[in-house]
Length: 103
Image (cartoon, rainbow, N blue to C red; front, side, top):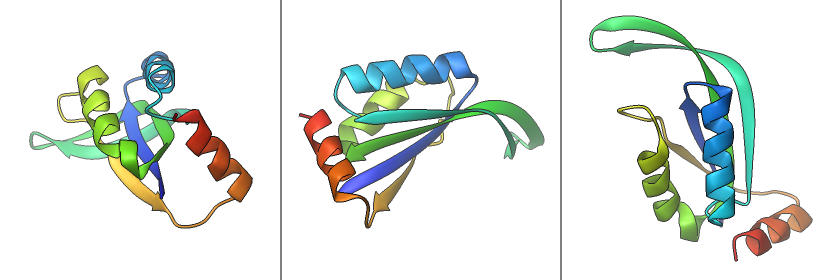
């Protein structure tokens, strides 16, 4: 089974550094960065609006625990958003590539 993991970071530079580290450590097969997203949330009793970069990581369920721990180690936020979505279906060729990239 494969997963799509999401996290928001403070800027594109942090997203790129995170992605390169996770791919080089074979915790993610592919990391896509969506720069300039606007997030609105409540933090410590205040409504905040922040420009961030969204990071989308493709990985296997086997690696998800290590991936989450590594994101927490590398992330600049005190409480990073880390969401894991199971991939129910996808291109078999792409998913084979994901699997091979994680070995």
